[in-house]
Picture (spheres, rainbow, N blue to C red):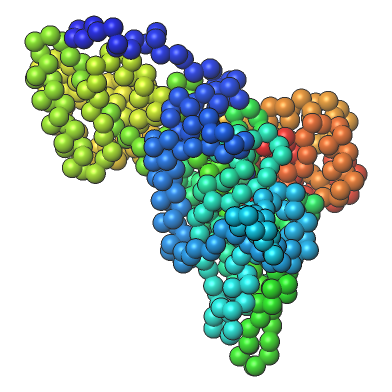
Length: 493
Ligand code: P5A
């Protein structure tokens, strides 16, 4: 085999990832080794996107953008919010006051009005919406922005999962004439988020948060939750019905066709880079990233296997293949570095290249190529002339189906219904591994009993049960026996 220089990496020299079973360590390592984020930035909760990670982020967000652009307009509002605006809506500020970073000085001068680094943009946008909304014909107003926001999180920070600077906050804000029209928008938003997460092959539960856990200032909150490999749930998006709570505070009023004046009703919904964290965590394996084809920064890698005297023929074929694949619009790397093939396989498995083509003298001779898929690692040979754009899309589609089925089965295996609280220890044990479904009355007293008896809490009640449980929505509360609804109990991120 060509190349035996001392600088070449062999498989042994490259350190292996910790097994995914040790999720916390695995996540910590994969973030760095796959070059998603550099965690050495000297401010807690702030991280640097590496070029490769940023490319993945961009590909994921271009889908989100495509979905939003269908019926939302993109806007940009400032990062700084005057204290006077942030503090106007009582519930909202109560919910966020512990988490706000303040700008108090401009140079050496103390500012007359402190400025908050936006923890979310309701109070930046809504004073302007007051100016934009005059008549019933100005609605619906649907805007979104993808910006950074700051939250002084006190819980354990983790790249992409719990940040103090969220770099990729997609926040949508809408204004409507009445409660019902805003509610329709809530349902539309839920459908948009379903489409987004289905595209990423990430399974989710759609849960209505209990009263005590809704977004500060909202009438109600619907959340998307997925289950992480350690059995904890992660909220990967939320949709809030704001009723006219903020409209009253910020005087967002409009003239009806009859000439009356009414307060508008609003919704807002958001997704952060937790969507990238979910893709990494849910699909990844012991070898590294496994990515849906559409968002893989390197979709196809070609690895020439070079033997002395045959290099030229192999490289020529490899380049021809690279050119065809590129001309069809795929993201392709021909890895002609000096590393040994084993080290190259390892590197591109770590980085989640969805399809690998190997080309050696044997393949050149038989006009074939060896193909391997990242998820199954199944290897087979195929004639070079059979490789078409259509074939690649076909493989990508099959891969997506496999990813979706595997992720769903894994999540489903972590969800179990409990019909009694006689043995809280059983529930506690289960919640250490996954989500318990129970019928629950939604009272705070009963929620406290669940929290005391288990290590988890009430995550929310099911909007749609879907395939998660055969039980109906209604049943007797597992604690008090009163009327209850099917709910999820978990340890949440
Ligand atoms: C909706 C958009 C809002 O802020 N205002 C505008 C509303 N909702 S939220 O639930 O508070 O946040 C939306 C989603 O952002 C993710 N998220 C985070 N991600 C990483 N690090 C954090 N510190 C963090 N905080 C919230 C969650 O997925 C949440 O659903």
